[in-house]
Length: 118
Length: 111
Image 1 (cartoon, rainbow over the protein chains, first blue to last red):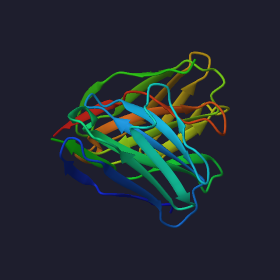
Image 2: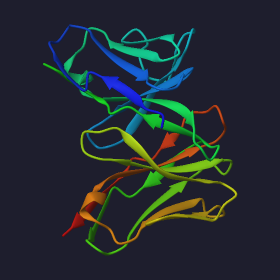
Image 3: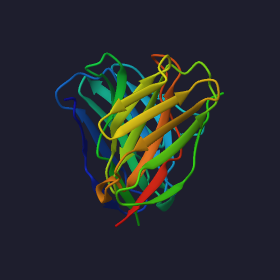
Image 4: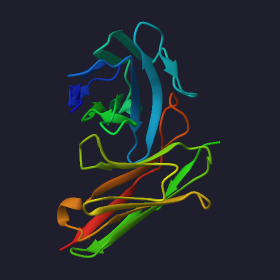
């Protein structure tokens, strides 16, 4: 089945540095990928929609200069957290839309990346 | 607007049935989904139901959809300790819109 691979799964960085998270579709092409941020109280917040070959679409309240998204190929989208601060510490999850064998469009998720900013 | 609501916690005994409920506000939702998240992991699709269906069963999972009340439920029969996780309800309004997720229900299974 369709697999989304996310890397790294866990990263610790110093405040002020930038961190890149990769999201790859392993056995399918993904023209669109979605980046979510999950807060400690469980809720999942859509940050942006990553579009291959064009600019990402950011949700309201998400700083595009802070969270840089690049979707350079049909199998890779990256999220770069620039000048990270402790409040950026979170669990970031990417996903891609795939067609289920039954015909429905479903989201397949990566395993997530835990970012801790010291 | 789109909004999906779920209760945050549910605790059941092993072997009992679990019922996780979800309400949504957008009557034009086309598909409704249930995802499972185990600790430290991403979300795994459990099942989904198309809006013109009332019920869908898949082994131990039964999804009920009441479109009139905009209510979706997930029943897990013979709940096992391995079912302990967070369960997210999500809706899709149209083919190109992102999914809207509820806050998730944390299911705890007591042995």
